[in-house]
Length: 258
Image (cartoon, rainbow, N blue to C red; front, side, top):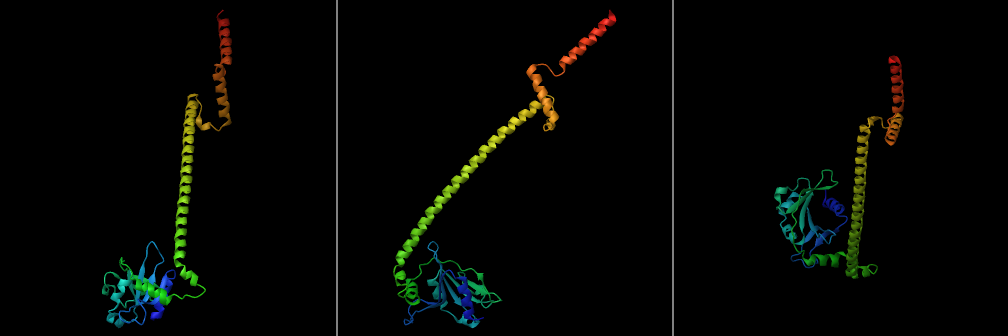
């Protein structure tokens, strides 16, 4: 495992961020007080700015003899050592310094100890170094770099448009949901009233002496129609025939006793 191997893993991890290997805090000719990060990273976020410093160690002696890394803390919100497995131990580091190990397969990084976030103002010289020594300005992209203020102004404007559009969409979705909820409530009320009417009808059918369980039976429907006719005429079904039979029987009794 080499420092170059670890550098590649860090670059892969921060492929969407500002990634500056061998980042200095000033021009090389000013050797007094000059620092050099193995890697300095800046997250691309206006809302949550974050600068991260990395110190790569592949040799135990190099780690033990290094006393300059403490000065790096002024230039980053989080600071990590990165080493092969068990080269550095978490309890050897201050509480606010983190640690990454390279996996035993050498294919990925995993965090052994989380670095504490330190809310500090990043010194401007590191940004000047990056702009003046690490950004290449050519005739093809000069205008783009020169108009950086305009670019970010447009970017913020677009963000404001996106925010307002998001609010508009959220409002429409909320109105749609509220409308659907109201519609469901109305349908539930209608079904409840319908169910109450059906219960009343079932109770009435029972009072007529009919079986509700036969409600889908053709014979049941015929019986209901006959009962309705009885209600309409006031004369129960078969009453006339019954009375005729009674009169006939009374006539026979009279003939017997006369």
